[in-house]
Image 1 (cartoon, rainbow, N blue to C red):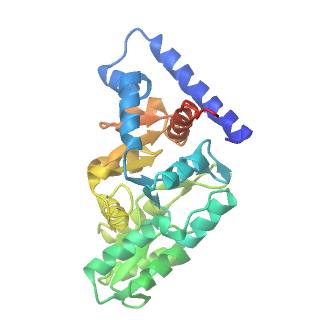
Image 2: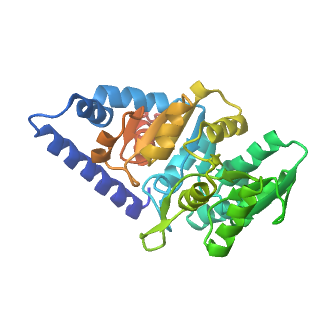
Image 3: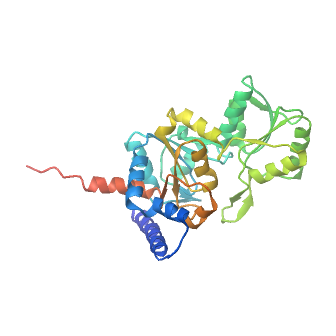
Length: 323
């Protein structure tokens, strides 16, 4: 492992250890917190479940907060992908961002030092196109507010742009939302177009870490004005998980999902009956778990825990004697 990544891994591990110590000093805490922390600190539960995750044949992996933050690779990310490739695992990087194409996501990981083929990526834009194809196998027309990744995915499934009388209004991730486009979407829905949203995330972060409105916020605007409810295809919908499983060609029991968000990644796994791995390298902290009525299968400091165990096993293998 490169020195800077190893240092980052140790820093994160130290933070987790501090959490253990702080928790251990508490005299009273609710029973559900005991269960939450047991997923992270109880060696028997943690190791058994970590080993079970390592034995999975398929991995559905969130990107931001799991593999990278912005333009920075997270500790153990490259080693984790190496582990997947070395052990012939099937895997998909799954993102709620409908803006990029798989090729653009591939290029981003290449810039960060991870080389994988474009067929290892699946977006909410692709899930939306799959869904519309299932509804109208012969294809149809759409009014889209979104970026090229969404438009290309729809086009590949036989759907063409139409701002007059489309079958669907499709809202995706984009920086081009304005009053004129939202008004157009409202009027088309009022005239009979069905409202589709790639995902219901109401916020995201800009390059400086500041909150900005996302697809769900703009979708809510159209919903309120038209008094309709959008159908969404991204996480936490079980639909995108079904599509991802279909791409992997694996059953639920053979698959796990790894993510950093309780409200999208983890709930998507739970509703799909796929074992879910929460990593603390992204937006979720241990203190956040008390807000949710469900918990992940296991909690890790980051994907580096998987690779560190792999590295420890390699280091402890007996060396062949030299005659």
